[in-house]
Amino acid sequence: MNIKKYRPDLGFLLLILALFLLWYSGRFFHLDIQSIRKSLERFPIVASSAIYVLLYVVVTFFIFFSKDIFYLAGALIFGPYFSALLIFISEVINAFILFYFARYLGRAFVEKSAGRKYKNLDERLGRISLFWLFIFRAAPIIPYRFLDLAAGLTKINLRKYILAVILGSPVKIFWLQYVLYGVGESVFTDPNAIVVYFTENPNLLLFSLIYIILAGMAIYKIGRKY
Image 1 (cartoon, rainbow, N blue to C red):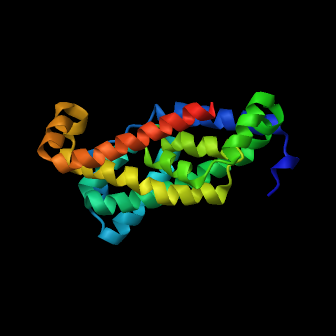
Image 2 (cartoon, rainbow, N blue to C red; image 1 turned 45 degrees about the vertical axis):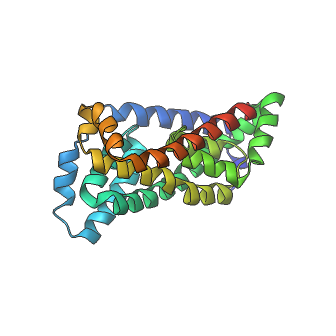
């Protein structure tokens, strides 16, 4: 579908309005880990997995900052490995939806309104390599939701971005689910529980060091781009 036939300013206004409404409406919803667990554990594993993916995609789209609940609930229900797979599938779906959401409503406005400086930045972002897109997805710097939307607003190719999502997302997701499974619900109530878990699992520190290096690379690249 050609977005050029739509008014760029109207599309961008709709994008901002939609994001604001999604953020505002999320304030009236309350997610509870125990409720999610009780609801999903009533079903066989195949059905509960499909329901989890559906809820993850729908709820995290409409409620900002609800992913933490789903991360922990998934780890407790399905374990670190299978929950990482389910979240990975959900994030690929989310990336595709949010990329097109921003590309359809906001890209034409950005292209029309950006000054010369930002057009040059847009050109550089459009030529960003798969390697660096992989780093951005693997490193815990930019939340996935904002990265998906930002990619849709730029000249980044959809196929290249989705490939980076597929290759890079498992690194962050698996690390997070493994830690959450080990720490459990105390991650929200006792910050020291994370420190204790890492000291009791020294091998995890090595993997986390690699993670920190990736994050540093992402920060460096962002600084160079700007």
